Image (tube, rainbow, N blue to C red; front, top):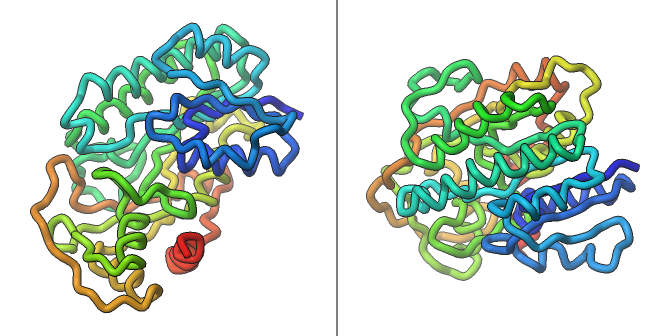
Amino acid sequence: MSTWLITGAAGFIGSHLVQTLLSRHERVIGLDNFSSGRRENLKPFHGRKDFSLVEADIRDADQCRKACEGVHYVLHQAAQCSVPASIADPLATHEINVTGFLNVLLAARASGVRRIVFASSCAVYGDSKQLPNTEANAGSFLSPYALSKFMDELYANMFGIETVGLRYFNVFGPHQDPNGAYAAVIPRWIHALLRGEKVTIFGDGKTTRDFVFVEDVVAANLLAATAKSMEPVGQVFNVASGKSISLNALYDNIRELIGARSEPIYADFRPGDIRHSSADISKIRRGLGFEPSVSLQEGLKRTVAAFN
């Protein structure tokens, strides 16, 4: 049994990581300040001897050091992960995503953690015109969020601790929060259509995204953490399906699954949004043996079923 620290444990991806690791009979410490994570995501694990919760903020270096004591692996998910929010408050985004990451990184080094796997983002590709996106090519950053994630990648290899960065593309699945101004499109649209409400698409709907099911993101984290080869250490990898779809086509798929008839409302493009996103996943296939296991259509079915 190994001990794992998951930052952002009450969040969408973090809570799925907690569930999977506990099902594998590992010991898990979850750290969250519940600024965006939901307590109900961790409710099923309360009272278990193999799970403990630290209610703290990654901007608190002392709390990070305490949380890392006796830990073998860190899966760092805690972040301010909204592009519009980062434009509205770049200082807070820097404090959480950069200073907070540094606190976790240095605490892990001091405690002798074996390896940190940290969440980066496809946002680092910015306005790159080279598609599909490969790890070696990045464009101009379009938001403070994108820049903060790239800074994490640069800091990761400065302190002599094993790190692996995962550039998440558009992750979706059950338990993703549909509420709030910055909610991801899939849960927000499903929630709206099930309630008979209109859906808003920003732009002309021809914007493309590479959606990856949360189960595959969990698998990528565990592969990165436990890879015996040193080859992945110090590297960053795309985590995606390797297939992109337009927002118009995505809307049609969700509407068909739900049986809704309403047409979307189109609004202006949002500042900081990437126009086209498509991942090359050949590097993670070679380096970690990762292979997406859940198609977009199957993932949408599971997500709709979870809402119902």
